Image 1 (cartoon, rainbow, N blue to C red):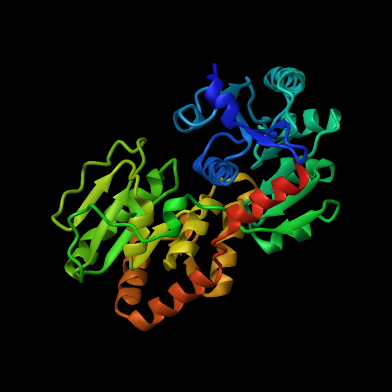
Image 2 (image 1 turned 180 degrees about the horizontal axis):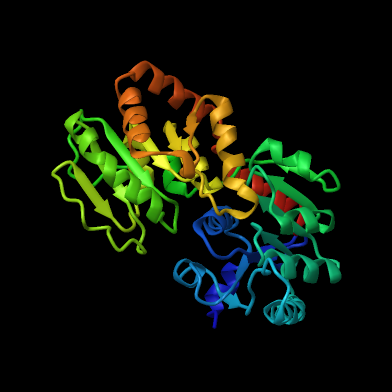
Length: 370
């Protein structure tokens, strides 16, 4: 329950001087950091809005959201590839989730919905539009997901993280905003790891969920990089059974690391998956990268994301199925021995950054949801 003071703080004065309730916004974002961090960044820019969250049980939002915003959850999952009894159950849950969203929006007197895509976006968008409320969708990937492509014509506006995405959404009103990052990425951060100042630093990460295959490949290569004087900080995620098998004075392994902004600001080179959120962070920090797209990403969308980086000269792409330890060893050594090339890649990465993306999206919300 909100206190009287909190309720007062959530009011703004109308032109006539009488109190007027601040706009109420439902944010639908669920699952991975790629959906959640941009939504949280936008929410930070709307302190005068009453914000509630829509997610699903047992996903990352359960850890990140409740301390900041009221979290509502619905039982929902993605559609299976093959039709069967499981599909019927999912369809039934989906239909029910639309009804639950309608009830939430009506009873909460919400003024509109902002969503960052994924299957949580579908019931939120349909429910909002059925009630005549505006719905803003942010699509971070270069190849928009199925939900975005199917429901974008219903949305008031679709904001895209990569300009190329607009060509897949010709029936929708689109605007390029890039993708927001957490606020710490926008200012210099101190690194609290014992890494010497003048050594080359390689940062390896597989996004918010880690990447076991990528981890195994890096461990095969690491000794060669150590011999060349490089240090490696390796974010392994929490699903790698072999995470603790490599030990070396120049190797730091962590399941997760909160200060990714400081780490990427310090890095000479990143080895990464190609989720839209990760690429945005690499761009904002001006970090050159070797990109290994997750091979099982829906419709291979990470490869499309990585291609934007490659075409700009900011990174190299390798298919996981075609990449050997010997090739990765050689590519990293070649880059570390060519500082001018690394700097050109860093400059190219920085050229892709839009540092006021959260502000742009927040302004869009203010224009359409008031």
